[in-house]
Image (cartoon, rainbow, N blue to C red; front, side, top):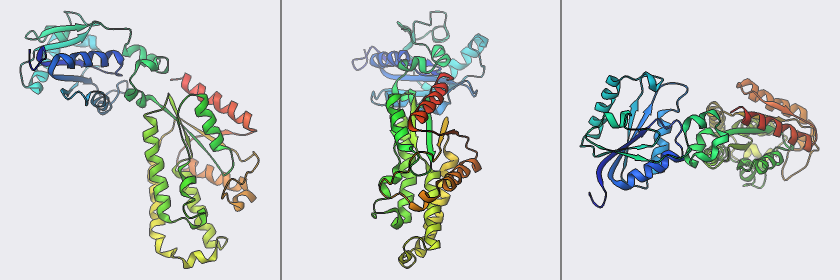
Length: 360
C-alpha cells in the first residue's frame, strides 16, 4: 500500500475518440487505486480522429479535481490498430516508460481488452488490472453521435454541438424564432447582446464606439460558454456581422444628418479610430466564426416598434435586409432563406434543423 493506495504508479490508456462514460469510470477507479495515474492518449493526424488538443482538454477537465492524474500523448503512426506489429507496440511501450520515468506498478484496462493485449504483454513488470466494461464504446458513438448523446460526459459533448445562426433585418422575428427553437429542441440559446447594451445611453443614436467593442467581444464569449452547456444544438440570435451592419448604418445616418446634428459636436470625430477598429474587430471575428446552419429571415412579417427600432429601416426594410445578405454572402457564408408567417417560419426552421441533426 502507498499512502493508502494499492499502487504507487499506474497507467490507463486509450484513443478516446471520443471519450465516453466507460472511459471516465475506468479513470475514476484507476485513480482511486494509485498514488499517481498516467493517462496515455493515443492520437493520429487524421481527419477521422479528434484533435489531440481537444482530447487533452477533455481528460484534464474531467480529472483535474483528482490531483493525481498526469497526461501522456502518444502518436499512432498507423490508421488501423490491427496493422500494428509487436515491434511497434514494444517501441511505443519504451516511449511511455521513458515519459513516466519511474517503475510502473499497474496497467488498467476495460474488459474489452484481455491478457493478449498490448497493455498486458508490453508491461510484464506491472499488474494487469481489468475493470468490467459496460455498453459504452467509441465506435458506436462515431457512427451516430446524437443517438448516443447520453454516453458522453458534458465536457465531451461540447465538441459535437451544432451551431445555428439566425439573422435578418430589424423586426424580422429573429428573437422569437431563436427562443422557440431552443425550447423545442430543449437546449440553450444566445440572445442578442446588442439590444441590452444599445440602451446604455437611452438610444442607439448615442452609443459610444466602446459599446460596439463590448457587444462584439461579449457576444463571442457567451457563444463559447453556451456551447459547453448546449444539448446537441446551440441557437444564436445575430452575430458580429449584424453588429457591423448597425455600426455602418448608424455612421451613415450621422454623416447624412438624419441623426441629431449635435452628434458631430459631441466628440464624434475623437472616436473615429475606435469606430474603425471595431469594424476590423467585427471582420476578424467573422473569420473565426463558423456555423452548421444559418437561417436568414426575410422582412415579410409585420413591423413592430419594439423599443428603439429605426424608422429609417422601417421605411425601406427590403433595402436594408438585402444589405445584410450581401454582408454575409461577400464573406462566404451560405444561408437558408425563410419567409412567410411565424408558423411557416417555425415549421421550415424545424425541418432544416432536424435534417441537419439527422445527417450527423
